[in-house]
Image (cartoon, rainbow, N blue to C red; front, top):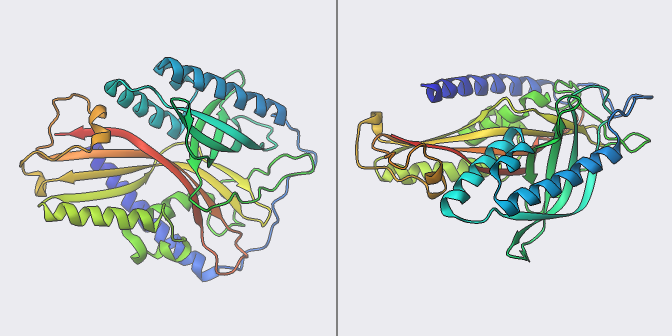
Length: 346
């Protein structure tokens, strides 16, 4: 029942986004230009040095937890979208009796906002390579976002997103002291309010180019690519007499924004991609195969999809939200990393 309610909520949100997009198209280019800039004299309660120390501590603790296969330690240093991905990863690897993968990071670039309040947070872009039995895979530019909710609380990695192939990092705006510029979730000087960047992406993922949101959303692997792939999956399942549905939905993960030198913003946010495969009208039928990546996540190995199979993914995305004064621009989802987070069959 919860799943069905979430579907209704998501469709309602997409309808609201469509109305917002139409409004943006009507007034695009009319908003006043406000260059991204830090307020003069802002106190740097979180120093760049402290952020670098927190990042280094995370790398050390994460590597130790992976080497020992220590799920408790591994989960203690992550939160938000990252927690769900890591939790599922540990579960799947323990089931397969496979070692937890380790990563090596190089050339980090730090984006530390000048904040005077909690939660504190900062971003990092780094070259990340998977370490498999001492052999490093290709380096991929990856965005990481760290947060400390309250004074005295530990730092956690809240999300990581690999840049799309061929994508380069946008230039982050910084103040004279080298601190990044924090942007509000409701900044009106951007093409879209950052709060609706995720739902706008979801509208295109769920309904494709026919949705009005496509008019302000760039094509790419995390938008039209998702739609094309899942639409093809739906056709393949239909040929087997099954119904396949997918829905990219918002979840209450923290969202973060960094100002760009051109007046736009880099928006980092987490979402769930929920998929279901079912017999029409949920009438019992032959068992529906559970995707291999989700089998370890079932509540019990005895679950069989006579009616329906749920396969949910948790994603972290990063998108460029251009300035409202720019002409003929669209939001661009430049990074995304996801993993299985929930499976159920009945």
